[in-house]
Amino acid sequence: MVIKWEVTMEGRLGGGARNAYVYLPARAEIDANARFPVLYMFDGHNVFFDADATYGKSWGMKEYLDATGTPLIVAAVECNHGANGERLSEYSPFDFRAPEFGPLPGLGRETMEWFVHTFKPYIDSHYPTLPDREHTFLAGSSMGGLMSLYGVTAYNGVFSGAAALSPSVMVAADKLDELLGTAPVRPGTLVYMDYGSREMGHLPGMKMARRFGHVASVLMERGAFVTARIVPGGEHCEASWERQIPFFMNTLLYGV
Image 1 (cartoon, rainbow, N blue to C red):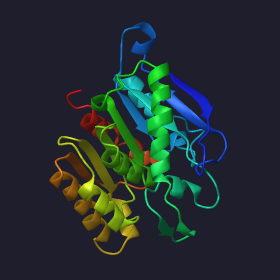
Image 2: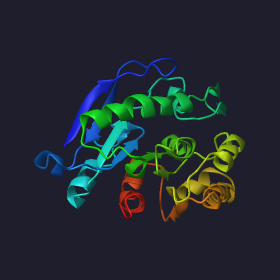
Image 3: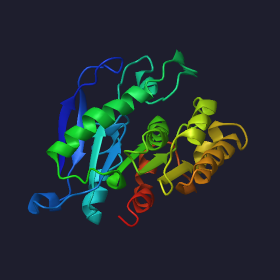
């Protein structure tokens, strides 16, 4: 079952009302004592319903979870769809320059503060969650993938694992490297990363592959358990990310 409602974000995030979603496994409806891990996802409009998805194709997360009986709650929030790069700002931890918009402020910290101090407490108080760090994860793609890497490192006391699909690791690369190299990452933090082989052509030569490998290596050096994949034939789209759900679910929920 997916419940959908409207939320607002204050301050510079703004953007008016936006949709929030929560998926509850079938067991939650029949077992009042059951408690479940929680996966928080970015770009929530693309997670469950094709009708809400930006390009008419969602990740199909509900269908996967229903079919596999995965004991997991998924909570997701729609991004800011403003025409002036608001999504990019909302999902970047650092100020940066976007080719199509010019300089943009990085509001990623404010976004994560809202997730940690407003959205997570709401989910924990209204649904049968396991609220501790060991059962709390992040996932996203593209800029949402960057936010997943940011969240699991800068907020490592809250999130024990993250899935970053096609993460935008070229954004403010020096600042990202500094964060990954200095954030207090607990040993054994789980990180799943992937990138589609057909995405590599967006940058000259092997630049993207080297950057992707560098980020994975830094995380491993910090003691994180990293699963990093180049997806054969993978593309930068929801249909491709949907096919990676079994891989990142196995990583995040291994041993849970």
